[in-house]
Length: 299
Image 1 (cartoon, rainbow, N blue to C red):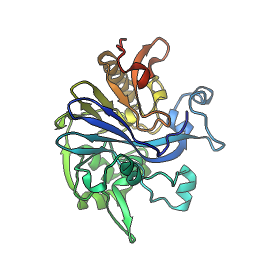
Image 2 (tube, rainbow, N blue to C red):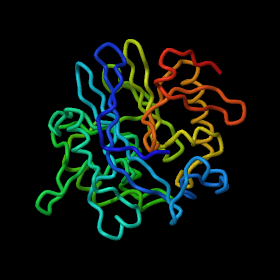
Image 3 (cartoon, one colour):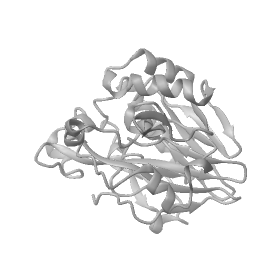
């Protein structure tokens, strides 16, 4: 897979003044074994070739949603506040930043009205803070920040098999520095935008649905982080509830396939979104949007 670049923004018009844009909020490398769990290395290396340290390319992709009522950013990427050790561990690409990616899309930090998190692991939330003269301040101080209430409670309490994925200091600062709106289960957020709690990666992880007049797009977050994870048993070792991931990602893929929804990927290093088609051996496969915009997608 060719890694995503910080070049021109990629957008989709869903109809009815609803436009979504893929925003690169960082680029890093993660351990391939952790990203694919119990899948044998000879299998996952066919689709995600690792480097000499067993790391695979991973985008930290966010979703910008522009409607007549709001400008919403889904997730905020990994940020740029890495020390030298962690820059080396994660092979962080210093050339990629959330602010620069938004600027390419013609959006300033003050334009964002809402920040909507799938969950609060650092690679999805660290970009919500930035360092200004040695002080951590909100990147989007005027925006309403939205997350499942159970997720923020678990994050602040460090309830995870990957406790280091929650950066307690960041979350403490963010919790008291911005306006929050909590979600609790499934439901609408704003006109054309709704969430669905998709337990698996974390207990209160949520996926995002964007509904225009012509098209619907779903951002599953870390329920299905890349195209390769469409395979039923290809589940990250990071997931707190892998059996829930196994069940729910297949349910969501089935719905997306039957309804012709567009699926946006958060960590896929190659493409920002796809449609899905049923496949005999792997369950579902991703189809490039350019080749399938008007195609029916049936199981």
